[in-house]
Length: 233
Image 1 (cartoon, rainbow, N blue to C red):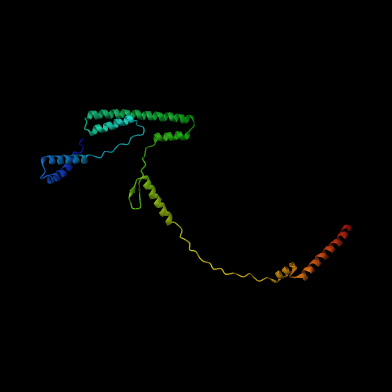
Image 2: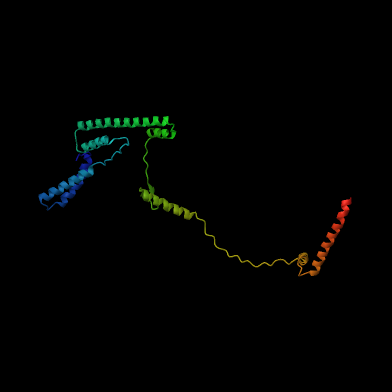
């Protein structure tokens, strides 16, 4: 294993060495050697810096990515600078070749979209090569303040929030009010209404009905008598 930060390694070994001396008082030399080797390896592993894996570009071919992985393994094994420099040169050439091939393919697609008057696809391809890539981060805090990053957990947090929001803004329940209705009596029948009702009803007022029929018959006879005189005028 290649040692990069010697200061961190010395500090880690110093703390572990004191514990090793206090614990290996009555041990045999073989056991002491095994325990010493163990704490030295642990100190070396602890002093190693955190390796952040670079994200692979979408236009890289598997062959170029394999060169990057090989260079990372060579650096970790402590190879010479000349070998690492040679690998870096090969990686740069491969990346440049892959990038140019990717852009050439995009340009051909742009020409096809322009010839076919496909403006939407044309602008989409232009944005694909001009915009800067911004990775999306999915992180949200739940009700107790814990950061949630999984998609399903984020959906559950939003679901709980919406439920609480709708429960808080919900209209209060209207209490049922009992309305006591008294039976209102109709107004008394007027005198004129009573007379008209009796006139229309033969059984209740036979005399008035007979008078009504006589008046109608007299009116008809007068009409028939006046009709011939109107013809001579």
